[in-house]
Length: 290
Image 1: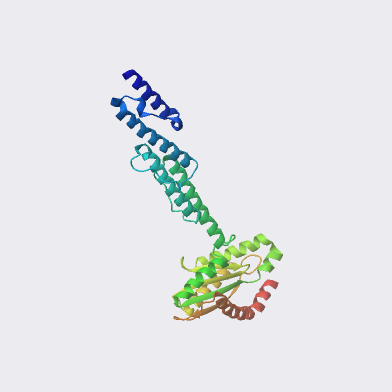
Image 2: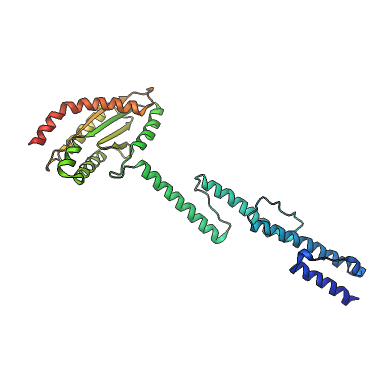
């Protein structure tokens, strides 16, 4: 009797392990003392079938599948993997939206690869942002940065001083001495200005020979004095084949001003600068003719 029951139960156990879909047990084939063991194997059979179906769906990426109940102890680790994959999917979606702060610490080697990826994406985004807001030649901000930063400054209602600069006769330098010398002319101007303003002041190249400096909590008189000094320092660099000079116009917005348009600011500063340029143009041209 024992041998027959053991053989039936062993064959059933073998089918559970190797051929669970076809594993079947008729308890009536067993003698009553072996029914409890047979029922235990039937429970195991159910748990294995459920585990295989569950693992098959997870392996196909079907994360919406419902997890087995707590009574299936065989699926405990699979449920942990399922939960991790769900969370990882959410993190991947956040990364796709631009949130590169996401990191993984629970998936071993994959965690390292994921974290390296997000770090590199963040660095690349910062590089692209830097490129988008920086002038390639001079390294200072460009027109995009000016409009963004200046609009923020205007919104505060604080006193602001704008200085609009135009490098005198850049075209003349390019035409007579070449574009490399023209670039040096631009770079020399930028370095002279940077040496005389604060690190936090906004200094941008709007394009070509046009520049703008924006100072918060600074008087127009202070800005005028500062740019007289800058102009003199830059002029003293003119010991080469051509004199160095620039024109500028300064306007001041008082506290609680109601101007919010950066274009309006540039237009006003340009008008003041144009008057400065008109007064000094004839003198500068005479210098060029020497």
